[in-house]
Length: 157
Image (cartoon, rainbow, N blue to C red):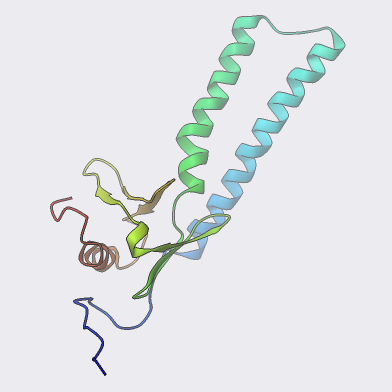
C-alpha cells in the first residue's frame, strides 16, 4: 500500500479566524436599517402615487439614485464581508452576515490584497467575498495559509 502524499500545508487541523462579536451585531443592525430604508422609500413613492401627490421627477430620480448608491457602497460589501473564516485542509469556510459559504481550495481563483482598501478579496467561480484585514484577528497568518494552499494565486498579491 502506497503512503498518502504529504502536502506542504502549514497546518493539520481546523483554524478559526474571526472578528469581535460587537462588530458583527452592529453590521446586522445597520443592514436591517438600510433594508428598511429601501422598503420605506419604495412604499412611500407608491403611496404618494396612489394619492395623486407625486414628487417632481428629478427629486424622485435623485432619491432613488441615492438609495442605489447606499446599497452598492454599504449594503453589498457588508453582506459579502466575512465575519468568521474557518480554514481546514479541504475547505475554506466563510461565515458571512446572513449565510455561510464553503469553498474547496480548487474553487478559489483569486486572492487579492488592495493597498488602499481595508478589504482583501477572495474570488470564486460565481462570486467574490471580502475579508476585513483590520478586524479579523490573525489576518497575516490567514493570508499566508491561503497563498500557500492555492497554487494559482500570485505570490506578490
